[in-house]
Image (cartoon, rainbow, N blue to C red; front, top):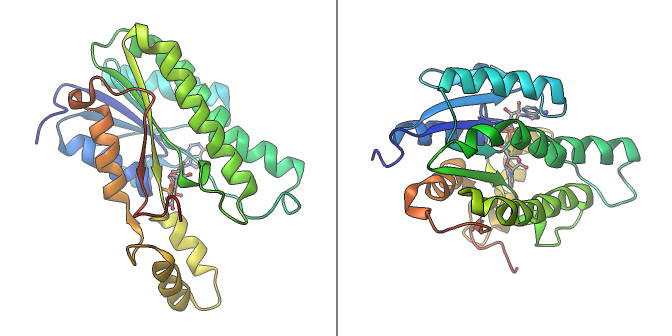
Amino acid sequence: MSELAGLRALVTGGASGIGLATARLLAARGAQVAVLDLDPSGARPPLLGFTADVADDASVRSGVAAALEALGGLDVLVNNAGIGAAGTVEDNDDEQWHRVLDVNVVGMVRVTRAALPALRASAHASIVNTCSIAATAGLPQRALYSASKGAVLSLTLAMAADHVREGIRVNCVNPGTADTPWVGRLLDAADDPEAERAALNARQPMGRLVGADEVAAAVAYLASPAAGSVTGASLAVDGGMQGL
Ligand code: NAD
């Protein structure tokens, strides 16, 4: 499939998990793809790797500028970099709240600000934000993370409204628990990782985790010309978790 031929894409957090699967799929469908990550070494050719910390505005501005210069412009921005946090409101202190909101929400804003001038010059401009089922599902033990993803959902709607007349579409994907190195790290920290993985799979309506490639396919659709009238949408890729 070459439905994304000629498009230039930038994927934050694109060196691992959902971001890496997305970067690879966009490239496989014909896009020229740059990855922006704290450590871009996981993004191998043909992906172009650039270093940036989305929590640092100067780092974002220089990383985005370098990526856009290499790409020669930008059509698709995938705001995917994010970090997790566990616990109720009593378990995370102010510093943790500021850190996670800074990466997961303000990080998206920083990258978007740096990318908007290039997106305005594109005839096929779109932004896809990685949100989460946590934005709407009321997950236990995820107060801070859920609040950050709730903000991503609202931000997606606001950005869709602000930029629709400039020809820039803005959508998000809401993954359920996805099989990525992030989840692997959580499982590895358990006393019995194998048993923990089996229990996690058993809690999923489909009896398995969501594949990173399945989330990537949703991102690729939202970024494609086929989704040309889709903006302000949130596409759940959660194996039926929503509403349970
Ligand atoms: P991951 O840890 O496998 O990959 C995240 C990538 O983001 C890493 O390469 C990391 O280096 C990068 N990153 C982290 N902080 C960064 C920063 N400050 N600046 C630049 N890059 C940074 O995680 P994943 O599971 O692929 O998650 C990716 C996104 O998907 C996140 O936004 C996460 O909230 C979301 N998500 C994940 C799941 C899941 O179950 N895995 C579910 C719903 C949503």
